[in-house]
Image (cartoon, rainbow, N blue to C red; front, side, top):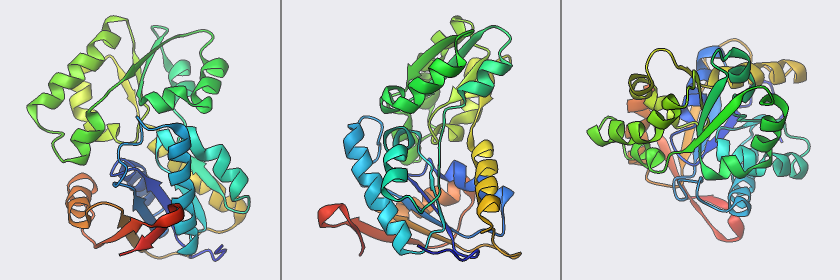
Length: 275
């Protein structure tokens, strides 16, 4: 494991969703370099069994470690809920930062007493989400909603298509009718639909994107371990288990990244290999 302060931060997701976290990280810590891996061979993670997601997360972690990551960000709510505890046990020397649905700030901010959260089935089934519900929702009404199809729309670059808003109304209008005034975006893909979501729910509902809070947590972990990068501009390297050209197009469209994307693939024994 690399311990150099100028070693990169590893980030992974099932696809382009983690770019919302990457963007927040780069904005807050522009001197930090990153290694981003998109496991598009298996996107979306949401419908998959938790044990399967955990195996993928361990394989990706081994890949990022082999490429010198000094800290790993699990930039996927599903993978965080399924695998974060196991990753910390399996790789005890490596600091991990995961995605935690922003239930606490939503519960603290609500005026109506009704909080909505949209996420994948796997996130709702995970122990992390259940623990958050027990800790922070005793005095609020929590309304949950899965959103099949949204991740796929973003992954294929069709998030601006007319059917996207139709689908959003189908998922979000019932939450509005139940009185929510806070909506937690419980999947890292969803911030890329923020404008369309805001049109559907109206200005009275606050959308909560956890990415800025995750970037602050990364900064705290780096400081605690004294492994912040030296002043300068961080270098960024991207990998995908899917099609590199497609990922590159989406990265440019979503976050303005114009660099190269490297193709990798899953080999035997759940190991990632370069093509």
